[in-house]
Amino acid sequence: MENFNFYSPTEFVFGKGRASEAGTFVKKHGGSKVLIHYGGGSAVRSGLIGVVRKSLDDAGVAYCELGGVRPNPRDTLVYKGTELCRKEGVDFILAVGGGSVIDSSKAIALAVPYDGDFWDMYSGHPVEKALPVATVLTIAAAGSEGSGNSVITKEDGMLKRSTRSDLLRPKFSIMDPALTQTLPAYQTACGATDIMAHVFERYFTNTKEVEITDRLCEAVLLTIVKETPRVIADPDNYDARANIMWAGMVAHNNICGVGRQQDWNSHGLEHELSGLYDVTHGAGLAVIMPSWMEYVHGHNVMRFCQMATRIFGCQMNFEDPEATALEGIKRFRSFLHSIGMPINFAELGAKEEDIPKLVEKLGIGDGTRAGFMELNADDVAAIYKIAAHAEL
Ligand code: NZQ
Ligand code: ZN
Image: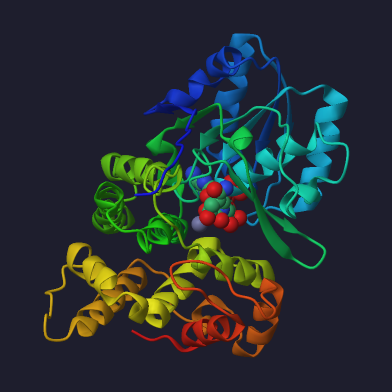
């Protein structure tokens, strides 16, 4: 295991009906003028925004509002929100929604105290200051409720880029599994796929002797494999929703990733797909991640055998470990298909002829991308090609 620091300062407020406590928690964490930031309308339709407004009123906390965050959130709304916050003297951002709303909130939070263009911080400039952010989560997926990450798409050129800072970790996150019962099955499944991907990005490592984090990763993966079909068959199943919601947080606040080298190449390749075609992040991952696995499995066949036997119930074939590894990958792809995910470019709405463009946007040049297995531009093109033609 490698040396590490683990810092996860978020106060998690979990359970039924807890959104009505938002005002109390904003006050506790020092907010006096709040921006309520939300998405395309689901939080308004469900009555959640009304609950949040009332709880801020009851706590005597002033607020203004900005809705309209789209999935794959755009820089254009971040500029608008930043102006609004400066004009209104906002000192606390409350994200009510999913990863897109939370990431847009984090971007506004770092933009408000910054003199230059906030995009600098999505192009390598460190985050030195940010307003406090908190969340009322409505979908188990991105894990942004517990992470220091934010992913934003620059409308001009549809460039999707991320930043990371502990200053962006939410002060509190209200997680009521009942709020996720209104999700369409497709969004539930996209969320489950993203959660699994966050774990696999950490699971496939070259670091030795990481039993505890391996087992934590496996617990999250087994939970998603068990609970996702239950909520797809029965969307109001609170207990299954609750397990998925907490799994989504555990998958990405990095408790599963400390002390080990991580990969993140599937996310890198996926971000170019959702940048170019504006597809849902989880759906893009369903197409990329098993394809990445097929391409890199030879780098450490036994690690893939571990996944195959411990997560997907494969029998270990000691004569032919590669067969076990490949069977595990096949079962992963079949699982994704069974919950309604696309498995190739055509099902996702991507085009094979765009592969050179996707590779170019990644900006690898003559270099490589680090990770479980280092990838050069030809490797990446080969992974996209597998994804273009993948079948069950
Ligand atoms: O906009 P509304 O109307 O709210 O609809 C949303 C949206 O259409 C809908 N939705 C959310 N909660 C709902 C609901 N519909 C009905 N009932 C509810 N309770 O679901 C759709 C997807 O929402 P979104 O916020 O986009 O989903 P998700 O949480 O998957 O976030 C995706 C974004 O997060 C980024 C992704 O790249 C993508 O941009 N990621 C952020 C990460 C982070 N900050 O740590 C890590 C991830 O790897 C990921 O990259
Ligand atoms: Zn993700």
